[in-house]
Amino acid sequence: MRLLLAEDDLALVEYLKPRLKSSDFVVEWVDNGVDAEFLALEESFDGIILDLGLPQKPGLEVLRSWRAKNLDTPVLILTARDSWQDRVDGLKAGADDYLGKPFHFEELTARLEAILRRRFGHSDNRLEYDGAVLDIDNQTVTSAQGVKTQLTAIEFRLLRYLMLNPHKIISKTELSEHIYEEDQLKDSNVIEVYINRLRSLLGKSWIRTFRGQGYRLSDQ
Image 1 (cartoon, one colour):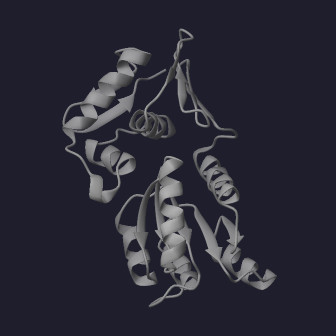
Image 2 (cartoon, one colour):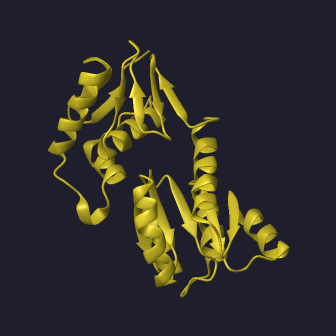
């Protein structure tokens, strides 16, 4: 999952980024409201962590602008402002959830995963498609034939994104953006290696190639 982290507290960013990465989130970071507003509208993110006290443009104004422009990416507000009125204002502006500082990282990830599941229409941490089951907590996939495989981090991120968007043709560029951070973007041809690895686990016809366009899961 690709996250936008809009936070100006450098110490908190240095705490959060490696932990989010270890939880298999791809994280892009901005430290002000102007850049946050622009980047979320220009690029594709699965979720946003938004601080209300951002410089240049307050987080609440940024959120209102996103929603006014029909950006429906789930937003988790993360802020030291934790009065009931602040929570109400944030939720009315279009936030999907609200977490006050200080917080436990485990609660942050649990809330993130909950709003992301709601966005993609899933009720638990398992994704199923055409007989295959992806266990998000354990990062394993079980094929329709019952063979369970422990996935690498890249394989897991790639398969999760495909299974969350089963009816969408996804380009190599988009896949790359959702499994690598911006400063680690790899040659898109590397994606083919991982696609073929997943096909060897789930079946050659399980992932379809659309020449010049990208990949999509086969019709069930």
